[in-house]
Image (cartoon, rainbow, N blue to C red; front, side, top):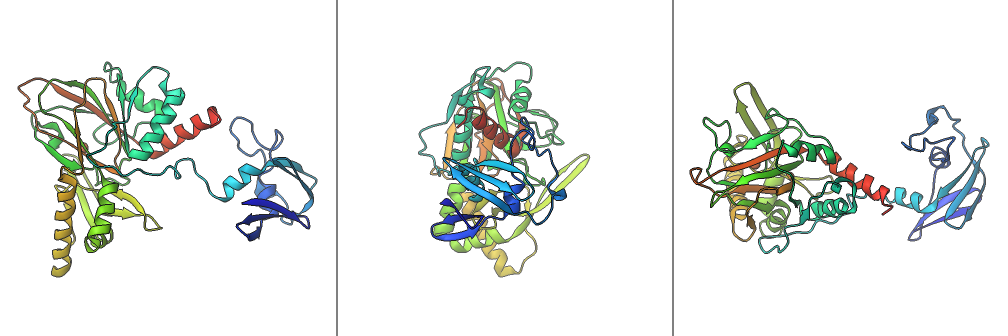
Length: 366
Ligand SMILES: [Fe+2]
């Protein structure tokens, strides 16, 4: 991939495929203190007010830069690498490859908390691992004073829901969700009935004195790939049937229609939703429903099988950060009379972690 010049035009040569770069595209990217605000990188001019017939009068490559004089008298120097990056639409986060995992995963992606972690290189590694595996565990995170709120807001900002800014997970009388009991919770994704579904869940262990109460995680991406390969007809119906997810509380009814496995525009994995107490399939014809129920049973069997389920105990100070669009989580049952099990949770959105990672990469020039 390279930049070529000929006849006062700039070309982008991508493996022999040569295309001209629009001179206006270059003109609206002029840099320097007169054109771009140093701190925010926002334009100091309005490109819609520029003349339309922008052309190039002079141009040359010197070292790693491309120098251009436009026909409106403006001169600028571009970093060729940054033009190539923009042309390939390279995104710092999109290009982190997901690593499929199952119960044989050896690492729990542990990162020891320290008070400077939000602004140092350790956080870059933690976020990379988060995008690769869908989860990381921060160890020794302070457990006093609802620290989870501070933690979440130091990465981005909390996504508030009708459960509040954060929620306390411990057994309580008359619970509005089974999370607030001591029952086992099968692998599920949170809040599939919201639009949009919360992206990332933080779960902070404050106390865990009981014998059971193990946390479980399943990689929805791995299971989806397994289904696609071994049960294509199940994969097909679960990626094409929109079902209604519903949550009813005393003062709100939340509903959203979505596929159990959502693909992106290129038919690649995007999101899973799984919460078989909250899903309602539409009244399809009988044959289709037969297939749908078989498919849901199969995916449930896979999500719940020992082959895919990671089981571990969170200890006080552990803060699990997990991708709620990719991973399923749950817990084993416990006896509430044995002692306390107390976790605090909250949600943040993808723009928080993406923004943090891009900021830190820029800060450390990585
Ligand atoms: Fe949950």
